[in-house]
Image 1: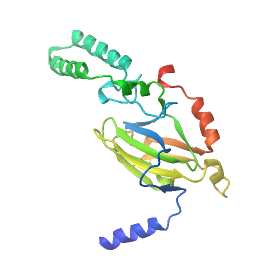
Image 2: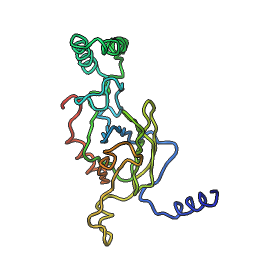
Image 3: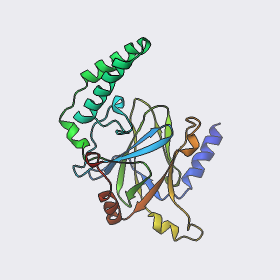
Image 4: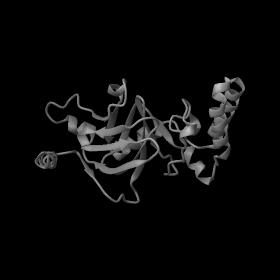
Length: 227
């Protein structure tokens, strides 16, 4: 077993990945969050304030896919649970009332202001080349795994905790397509844990581009406040 592990490490050491893992992120690192759920990904970017807003898993909904904690989303969830309690069967009352109590104890503090200009995307996500990326990873339901095979990066997404990785992508998507035979190439993020029947569909295109192209793309995305 030890020889096998040594062989795997030797093979990985010989791989030429277009990204470099880093240990202590610099102050100017771009922070993003990858959020997994059966069977899709969402990626969140900070807005002009440069900070990601707070979240809470009880606030996750179709309108709030990563559970941003703002006064409006909290009130929306409280109203929803109040209505459910009014219409609930006796067997469901206890669970709903406990949720109502937890929502009543939830506080919106000064950090919530950072959530309003956050940007959430779910089809493809973009990153600037040669910029350090600090990637936080969360899961809504079961264990997923953020796998960026071309970068040699793999990070578990575990319910109830936040994991992370820091890296620098060093070759743009367009530049790597110039290489012979790579015309149809795209960087890709996928799930590397068997997380259910739809596991195979948890894929997302990753676009590595210049800082200017990245900023143009980001400027065209809707913020939470404007969606």
